[in-house]
Image (tube, rainbow, N blue to C red; front, side, top):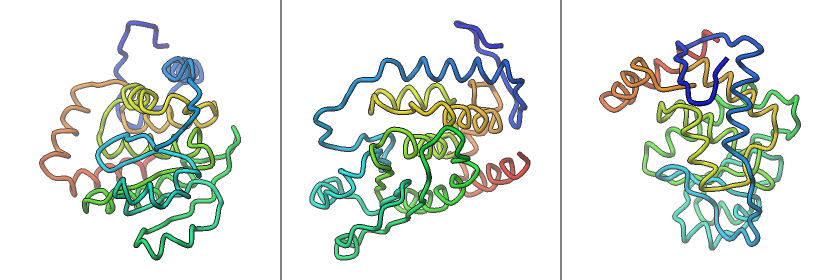
Length: 219
C-alpha cells in the first residue's frame, strides 16, 4: 500500500486491493483536512478556466453569475431550475444526486455531467457546478471531470480544489469512488503513460476524449 513520501505507479484500469484503496482514501482525506468554514461564502471557487464550484446560494444569485460570465449551470442536487436562467440565456442540467456514503454518484452521473461540461468549456463557456452547499456532490463530480479533462493525478486535482474551496469532500463514500475512478484512468500518480496521454490531449483533444471514453467503458 502507498506510504507517505512514495509514488507508486499504477497502470490505467488498475484494480486496487481493499488495503490499497483504503490507503489512497486516507491520502485524499488528509489532503482535504482541516476544513475551513466559509462564512461568508460570497462567490464560487474557480477550479480551472471556466469551471466554478459552488453552492445553491451562488446558483440562485443571477447577478453574481452574470458578473462571472457564467453560461451553464450543472446542478448536482435536486432543486428546480431557477426561472431567471432562461431570461439570462443560461443552460442548465439537473442531476438529482443524493448525498450519502452509499450513493453511486460517479457511476450514475459522471458520464452525463461530462457530456454537459465538455462542450460548454471547449466552446469557451463558463460553468457553475453546484449542489446544496458545494461540499460533496458537486465537488466529487467536478473533480471526476477534471481528472478526465486535464489528465492530472488525483491528489493534485484534489489539493487544488481544496485550496480554492476548503470545505470539500467530507463524504467518504465519494472519496472512495474518486480513488477508484482515478485508478481506472491511471491517475493516482503521475507516470510516463499519463504524461504521454496529456501530450496527446494537447495535440488532438477529440482523439483524447475518445480514448478516455473507451478506457472508462472497460471498467
